[in-house]
Image (cartoon, rainbow, N blue to C red; front, side, top):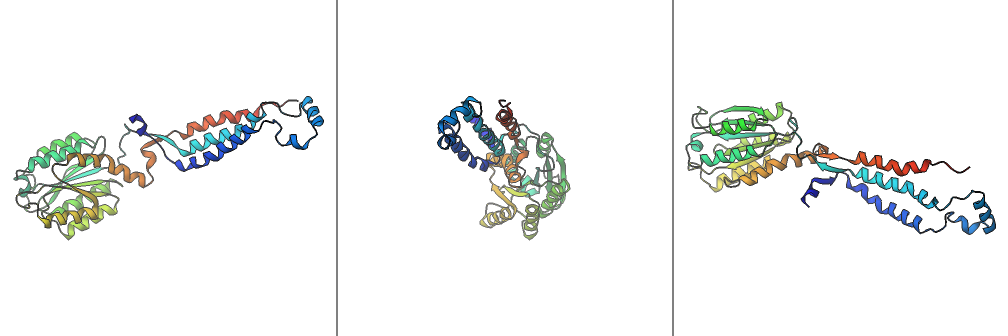
Length: 308
């Protein structure tokens, strides 16, 4: 029954009080006498007379005494927050977003790995849903190729048009591009953004680490799609630099063959971070308030008209 995964309890600790309520109901149910302990201290003749005069509740008194407990139980379940996940909810523009940062220097675009880089980028875009995204390209300088938008199709098409002529400035300066990505997140008030750097590792240095620290300090996460080109290769030094970068940025390193891993993380990582920052109810619809209406039903039984 996979549908059950769509449901959760937002505040499950309230359920710890339910066994106590169940215990009280059990004790009341075990009591056979309507008058409770009064049967043991009042003269039987007097008790019979009081019953005749209607001064002792009848057989329904036990059920009436249980009504507050049933209402309390329903209230506790309501406070536990039974909720269903908003599968089709629109993304929250000022909470969650992705910035793709792509190295378009000649070492990347003229390498045999370049088509695979574009495919990885488009795979990441396909996982966005209604999440807004932006595209930054860089070589010797960095430029915003696409501002933050929910039109993921436009981002994907732009990626397919990138080549060695997109950025005329020679070189590879990822720190400038990461700084622009941080600026995009800051200007849009994104508090759980993802920055995806697609690079062969060229040009990484202290400035890039500082930019990664800036992104992490804003609540963002920096991950890297590593493309081991002919120029950079897959040397131990490059791998160590990438691991250091993502450890500072709080993300992961993906190979060109790990499109599924990138897509899964883009689907889930920002949501988990928002939940940890007390934004849980933006992803779940809490139905506890409606259970409070059910709790009114046993409460109404307490307002019955007494006998004259």
